[in-house]
Length: 109
Length: 116
Image (spheres, each protein chain N blue to C red):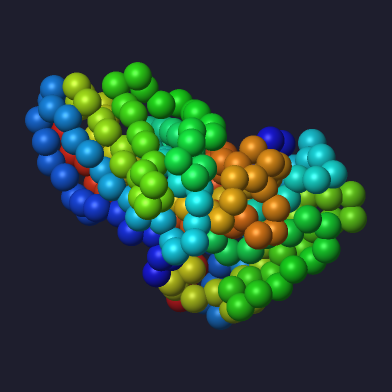
């Protein structure tokens, strides 16, 4: 599975959009981009995933660049409860998810 | 609530002992995954089962073993426990055994294991 690079940490003001970047320059054509988050030792929570097109669900939006070498997870109106570690994962038919260090997002009031 | 159930939630045991962690996957899911999360290692994939058969193996120690039963629940057995085995153990499940839009992996809330 392709490797991903994420910033170690980010801060966001409550009520503002949180934009979390991820680089995956070695992604192959049939690899998906998945995002999960982990709130303080709880189980990782699925957020969203995509292949080529931008995706949106009730939690977030995922913007994937045309060359698919990077993506951005957008939390449109961050709340204090969104403070968590966010993981960007590229996944092929290798059934497992390989977690990196992720981005620590701190939402501040 | 992801639908993945893990028991026990907390467990304290002594070095050298053996414990069994149990996982019930989401209804209809055939794949079960086990992960270990310790403070210094992050989330590490241990092993995956698909419909009772081992599908993929990660950094699982020889002292650890797992199985998936015909009713699809899974157990992770940890033996000859050492202090360094203290960690959060997560179970996850998915419908199938490969990647793709219909195969999102959902995690349970974990089992805290403390070895003293």
